[in-house]
Length: 248
Image (cartoon, rainbow, N blue to C red; front, top):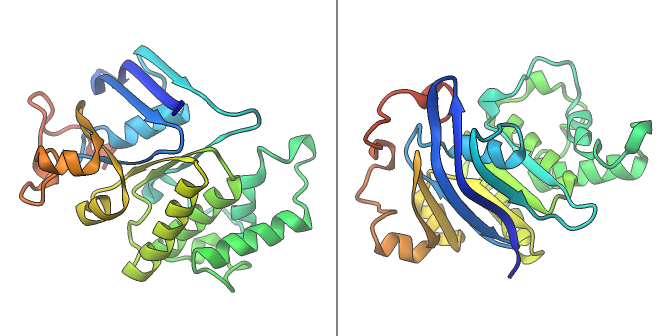
């Protein structure tokens, strides 16, 4: 298999605090990986670094995309402006911006695709609603629909099932599995160990440093992922109280 994302000895810093320390990781093309770890472990920081939003203070990162390929990133909803006056379908259509060139013209075909993505995530009929009127879970699903239309080769999801009921989570998991079948690379920050065990073949366990990565069942066997552990409480020795403002 080829490598989609490779990090070598990557460290990322917020102000004076190191959020990621000397991380090395390889995500194979077409892999479906859960990123797990306690609050403040640097999981969101890892995704933002791969997405190119944060720059490492040291180390190297390589991203291999096919020609015309792109990276899609779904942030935690808490970090997204929701007051902007915009309809749901227009917000989903912003996912096409990379593809529309300088004209920024959204075609009827794109709007139809956006509507289909909204159907996929269970928001049929809400196309013309203002995004400020959506509930937390609906807003999360709208962001997920935006990722669908981006049609990216590498997909980064930060806690995509927050505030979403079990039935909708099952729908979104099916979309993840479809992406996996299409050999896209999906990296998903997740705290639900049951979902990780059931659907994610690979896992990456993080607590400021990389605690382990590989096949999910091996991570459970090694107790790096464990239902006995409260994942929220695993702490790195030097990192007890800082990252909550940036990274949950």
